Image (cartoon, rainbow, N blue to C red):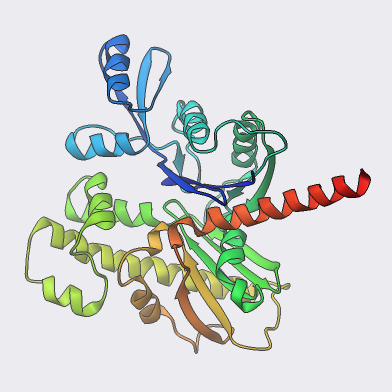
Length: 346
């Protein structure tokens, strides 16, 4: 069975034709006697990793603990879309997360995973990140192929427009952009800002933990980035509403940063196609899920300054899982081709 794996900074998401599974890409270290801690976690069926006598809670349970115990340090195996160089325990944690999501491969199963494009605003390469993930997935017995994150999104979001347009994947660590014409990627890049950049700046401005901001952004019933909603709550004065106001400000700054860099890349690239018609722009990724996000995009966009005519802006259906589903569609095509080749040779 073909599988697609979105290897995101905040979530790992696995897709098959029968199911979609998610796991938070976080962990925290539990102090105390390791044997006693492991017994406690086993009683609760909480996933963990043990390394060098330390026990690390993995995934959603780690995030939940961080909400309850504010002094607990929530750690990330990845940072700004790539492996976190500050985390020595990142690899066993990632191995545990990947294993939980995709399991061991059966005969001749293909897994396509995604990587970011090289960032234009950070001096980091993606090659090591790509190789490590390949080794982890290969260790579970899969035939492994790689796909750029924004290309995977384009395969889902631009399918009704002859795979022509612009796909922007709004991740936690990075935002990835792809310009595509009839299925061919002519320009792709990433910027090292995303949902985490918003959370960190809001936390600094509001004097609260990053985990608190993330929780408000993901689960608050009051969060709505539309101007009318913000105006309605502006007088409230509580910590939650202060966080919401700051979140809107930084969403505007992030979208503006994206569009400015996309304009600069268009103007300086030699391989960008001359589109005969207006093109759609599709958004996906967890950072785009906040209510009112598309209104913020409309406010920041200026057609007179943008180098190509835009048809419309849309949020792809089930935006959080779109990249994983794009990876899955590629894996399915690879398996179909292999089956056809085997049938011809037999």
